[in-house]
Length: 452
Ligand code: SF4
Image 1 (cartoon, protein in one colour):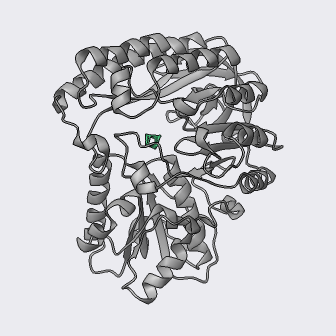
Image 2 (cartoon, protein in one colour):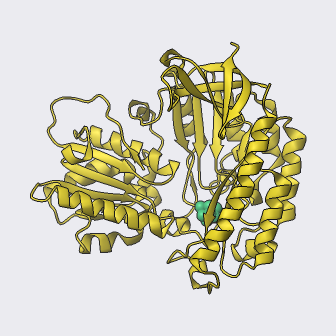
Image 3 (spheres, rainbow, N blue to C red):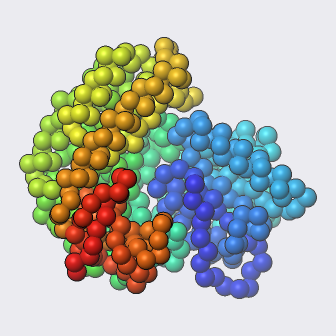
């Protein structure tokens, strides 16, 4: 969960807001859109959620656990503000999915779906003028004007040199375990011309690093005959002043050689690729509706090695999908051994109401799933440590992000392989690209010294 920071605003307004953001990077970007819209309508940021006249919870629906957690968070907030006139707004994916119930159960005073994030200021004004306007849910494309807004540079909970740049909304891959297509709707690519104007505006204001965001960036442009993702990425890499571009998330079924060529030819594109594998079993991948096989995935891994001399690979893995046998789980372990991911986000499957996989019968209990997850985590941790040790003695370009958690004399940076590295430094280094010699590994973090 991320609490949204304050930024400068006109002093003339009395109603204050505070946004708590849960879930993925897309939600962080939506929170920025909401903050901009609120400021434009004369609301001002509060220092914390308890002080705010308008408490906004920007929610995630991906896991049932995440929804339950945010509901209890909102309930406890409501208790603390009892007797006050605070408006509680629930935004984001959970609002889209169960907004009616949230109003009925008096968890929310107003709900706003993710499509309406850029208009939340106006919608709040309507609600405040007439409290009967409480539900703002739709998946109309017309709600998208304002998604790419150069004024967004004014609001940020990200460092002064970095910006998230959302390039698509929604997803139509319908992986059988995933709720996103049902709450965020079909794929909509934002116009490449507007995205590039936005990136140039960011660069002219000192932004050095951007992350292009979409549920499946490789599908960019397929819905509206705009340029392909690799072309957009290449144009973004050509914007003067942008020192590093990251992108999230790729889907193996749409990953192209053209993309690898563009990465190879542009030194300012990350060498860290996030490519969710999800399972090492073809039968389970089929049940997940992922539309690639393990062999397809391995072919991409080989191509990455062929095109890009130094790269890192991270992934997402789900264990205990309905019907996953011990042998099929071991196929996942074998794939992880073979591919040797630098990092993996690992999950025990939990059924999500509203998804096709919800209807599949589960044979494994929670303990068995957690047992498999622990085996996978132990394996991945061993591999991660080996991979980190392999970069000792190399020199890495790193952008410095903040102080190390343990010392104000040391700073934390991130390399082009997306490794975290700690080195001596000061706040003067924040946002700067620095060459770092890697000396060792402490825990799972690289330790280095700057050489330039
Ligand atoms: S690609 Fe699959 S997992 Fe990712 S958002 Fe789309 S449906 Fe969900």
